[in-house]
Amino acid sequence: MKVPTTTGRGDLGINMTPMIDVVFQLMAFFLMTFKVASVEGDFNMKLPKDERSAGPANTQVEMIDVVMKARPDGDLAFVGVAGLPPFGGAQGGFLKLTEYVAIKVSAAKAAGQDEPEIQIDADDMLRYENIISAVSAVSSHYDANGQVAPLAKKVKFKPKE
Image (cartoon, rainbow, N blue to C red; front, side, top):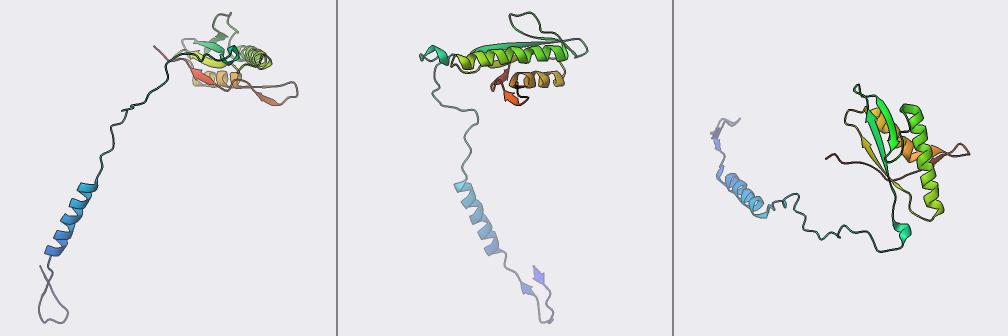
């Protein structure tokens, strides 16, 4: 490659060989030092067996299964607790659900047990706002002083089969 000069005395040549040598040395360096990440999902862990602890009886946590059924249009048909008659639809049902969970949480605290866990089993076609209302209903309420008091801290959704 010839580069014209401003003095007009001749062309200067740029020797590309050293630059190519450096580039190949850098490539060789990075190829030799590159470490491939381990395969994702390869968990070689020893997990505890699925057994309840042999500790005192007050460590057992009660599970409250909240059932929510939807109408064909996605509105809430009823909300309830498994094994009990339905509490009703929208607002009235959520108020009764909050009262039921508050009673269960206060009974567990009085007995020195952990608060119950909530598992929500909602229809697939149920509107999202109803699910959020159910989570709000089981996670906090207004106490006698008008203050927001926490209820269940562990809320999960029932996995679909």
